[in-house]
Structures are given as structure tokens and as C-alpha cells.
Length: 484
Ligand code: GLN
Image (cartoon, rainbow, N blue to C red; front, side):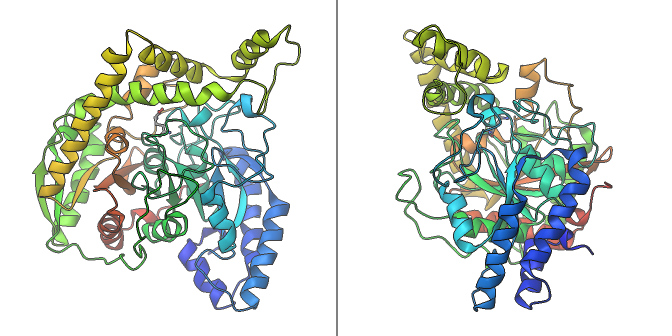
């Protein structure tokens, strides 16, 4: 086994025993990047010198007796998270050249623990998309089939993990952007409860939905990485002032007597037969392990998509007003006056999908339409949240497909935004309800990975980690590697 193939937990054990050094581990991963990155294109920016310097520092810290599960572990960071001194573009041309003078809190936490940061991963522009095809720079390729998308918007992070170009990565999830690419790339990805993780330095897309979280080779690594980034942050008033449980200790491979809910609304039209089959087979595994499978209902599921595509663009249109060419990144150089400068900067700087969302959002918020669209969407959002509250009275966690179908072909959906949005059908409700979820691999359809989602109640990440871990211990999907 090559060092780059290790999970975080495996690498930590070897580092602890002094069988390997962080420098050796980091060199191995950088070498792997050099070998496969031209095919995958997971990274917008790789910072090898900084990474090796951090690895050396980590080895020194360990030599002085320090230890933690992330000390010396090479990780990748989605490019919507601010990194001090390293360009952060959010996959957008409008932010080209923007070098943040500060770290996002999640990044700062990883640095304090002594992780090695390899670089910034590709994303749909401002995290708006499901395939990385909306990146202002290039499309990332799915390691399982290079002609297919890796999913999005955290497609760079997911592909980097799946291709062993890092040991783990951070992504963000506003409507599925951690879970969907994790499913498409055959890895584990966890969206924490809204408020569990600080959003400080996460460049805002939709502030009431955005949440950062881990994408990893297995469930245990997700627990380790979540542990590192979770917790209250005085710099983000929406981060909850709650104690953080021990997520790693919660990993008991035991679901006996647990009640797992299956929402009947999730297995209807539009779902690929092979995906449904794989998810049903996963349910059988949990049943064999002693869980009780119960039917639940999330009756407002059909409204999640229209509600999300009003609320998310509305918030985006407000958040993106700040890119005026004055404060950050790109600025149109030959403007006649200030209005011309704003107009041209935004016209050239933003891609088509971002402009579409700004228009949708501005429309939904404008006088006369606010009540009909935005306000109504907020009301239905409450109904969706209440669906989950009711369901969790009947079960400990909910099981659902992550996506209706496996990774689609690059280019297949770019001209049809509605078709692209429809793929988010199973992931969006969770963000609207503010609860948590994890996607783990549960099979293949036509050679492409299929993901199953375990959804939990607010601040109940320990339960979904446990349910996921039990499944993983009983199966071998997470051990499959793409033939690169
Ligand atoms: N695919 C969804 C969208 O395009 C979700 C994106 C995300 O979670 N950042 O908005």
C-alpha cells in the first residue's frame, strides 16, 4: 500500500508510532497529485512548498511530544473557504487575485492542529452548481469515469479524496454540495447541522443554508475531521453555543433496536432503478444488523426544490452585491466612470449561472413579488422543517438515496439548468430544515458509485455517524478504488 492511499486514522497511527513522518506522507501525496492531477483536475491551486514546510513543522511538533489525529495529515480545502496568504477565488473570475488576509475559522482550526494544507479545490462558481461545470476555470473529472462529472459544488474536494490526492478534504453544503459529490465519487461526506460549524471565512452563497463539513475516505475520518472543525465561534453569531460531543467515540458499529425511517416520498418517479436497488440493499444490511426499518412521511418534499431555488438565489443576490470591482479581486480596467466599472466588472467577472441566480433572487425579493415568492417560500420552509420534526419522533435517523441517479456525463446538463436543479431533489430539504446528513457509498450503477444518505435530527451527528459506521463495518464499498 502506498502512503497516499492511507485514511486519516491509518496515517495517524503510523505517524504516532514514528513508522512514517509527515514529510514522507506529504511527499507521497504530492507525487500522487503529480501523477493523476492532469486527468482529474481537482485542484485550482496546489501549494507544495507551503505543504512541505507545514509537514516539517508537524514532524517537529510530534518530536516534542505533541499528538492529535490531524497533526501532519495532508488535507485539501474547497476554494470557497478563505486561506490566509493563499488566493481564494470561489471558482469565480471575479475573485481572481484575491488573497485573504485571514483564515476561515475551520481552516484556522486545522492549522492549529498542525494539518498540512495541500491546496484549494475546484468548485462551481460561488458553490452554485452540481457538477463543477460552473467553475470559472475548468471542470473536474470523476475519478471513476473521466467522462463524467464528479458532482458539485465540492466536486474538486470529492474527486481529490477519491483519487487519493489528499487524505481528506473540506467542502461546503448549501443544498447538497458535500453529499452529492461524495455520492458521485464513492466516498463519505457529512453536512453538519446548521450552527455546528463556524461559517466565518466561508464565502457566503446562501447564509441561512451554508455549512462546511468533511469529505473523507471513510466514516471514521469524517468523525475526526468534524471533531476538528465543530464548535462555537464568537466570530459567527449563527454558530451554536453548544458543547461538542466526542464524535469518534460515538462510532459504535451497533444499530440494534434503532429505528431507521424510510421516507415514502423519496422512492417515487425519476429515481434510477439501479440506485433504488442499491439503497434497498443497504436497508437490508441495517435490518440484518438489528435495526428496525419503519416507513415515515416527509409530505412537503415536493416543495423543497422550488423553495430552495427561491431562498438560495435571494440570499445569493444580496451576498454577491459586494463584488463591485473595488474591494476584491477582478476590476474592469478601462471603465469610463464608476457605473461603467461596476457593470463591466460584474458582466465579465460572473459566469452565466451566477448571473441567473442573481436575477432570480433579485426578482423574488423585489417589491410586489416579495410576498408572493420569498415570504411564501419561507413559510413552506417551516413546513418542511416540521416534516422532519415529526419524522424524528418516529425514528432515530432517516435513510434515503443521496441522488436520483449516478454521476452524469460532462456537458449533458449544462444547457438545461432545470434538469441540473432536479438532481438536488434528495439533498435540499435537509439544508432547508437545518438538520444533518451523511452520504456513504452503497454500490455501483454502470460502474459509477451510488450513495446512500443517513439524515439526522439537529445536532445529532453522533447518531448518523454511528448508523453509517455500522454499515461501513459490514460492507466493503468504501474500500473500492477507481482504476486510475
Ligand atoms: N446544487 C445546489 C445548487 O446549485 C447546491 C449547491 C450547494 O450545496 N452549494 O445550488
